[in-house]
Image (cartoon, rainbow, N blue to C red; front, side, top):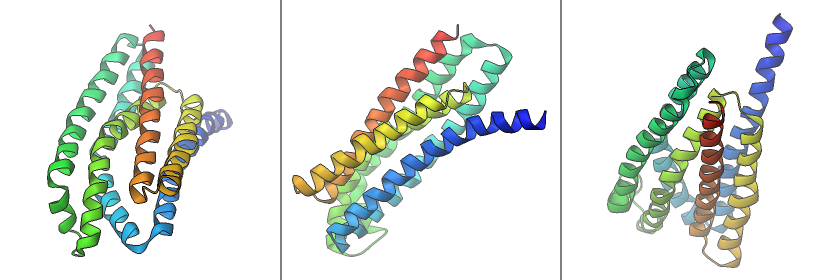
Length: 215
């Protein structure tokens, strides 16, 4: 019995772990790329990343709740609730990320100035926060969708979709825009935005399809 449970947990845990490593690793690679450009760029990147990561905590918390509720509904056989829970999670995430997006777009300079005093860093961080504001929407959506899929026990294909989005889209596009189109740190951030957008679309479609297919 213990061996069976261990195998079941491993089958779920390893793909989830690889998915998380792929996402975190992509952001780490983005930091390395920005760091290779210059000190000011790296400082501005860290300011913007700190702000984006802080606002991301709310959608992440919603995503954890979605995992529990989707798992509960699937486990007790309340299949008709799956899409309602998923849609509710998306709506909640969209409302909050919309608010944080507006905050970054309208008050990005003021926010950056509360963290650092160097005017060059503030100027660059303000521009990066504009991009961060844009990808707030897709970042919240993708984490909620991936968590919903985990609640339904679907982890292998989402892990593959995540790896593709972050390492076949985000990093190559970011490197291309940063170094070949000379967009610098902005290019890296647009690459991350494209990758998160890809994850949001693919994971969102799969979550919606799987929640409906179980009826």
